Image (cartoon, rainbow, N blue to C red):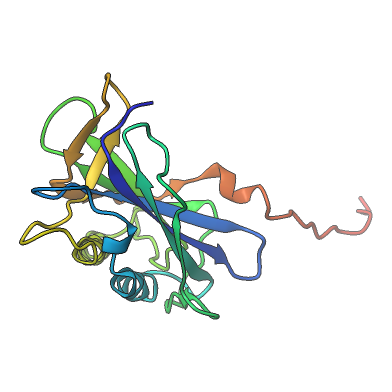
Length: 221
């Protein structure tokens, strides 16, 4: 599989009081205007950690959603990680959401779509937000105002991660959509984020959560 070089940033965490884990990933450009591509040493670790703390520590995420670490993967043109990934702990207690009003099932997520400008490969990407604290409106969708607020929070987050990747001069690391389609793969710079109002589901997040039943006594008909 051939792809354009890029950084893959993975945020990882857990749902408290369960064996379930969650993760989502973002992709960013590594290419400098001149010279070699950026490497792990060009990522300001504290900048990424601070961005995650602001985002995942907000009331958009419930108090059972904890981010524990993030990892950076330096992806080469063969689609494989170059060297060992960068693994950064978010501390002993991690970063936990502060919203206490709503707890959704662990397989419920909110999908952020990353959209490029051109049709074809790498036009769309996505990442899934876990453990959302936002309740549903009367039409069983997230309200317009809650969607707009969460979209702005997500936008600020991906921009802060971009700022923490130190490229040469005034060059800014761009968020990317990556595709393996074609001889060398394809990439598009993310032009905008899009956030739908309908909750999404990720089936694999129920594999470790054990069912437990309460049973009535024998029914006397």
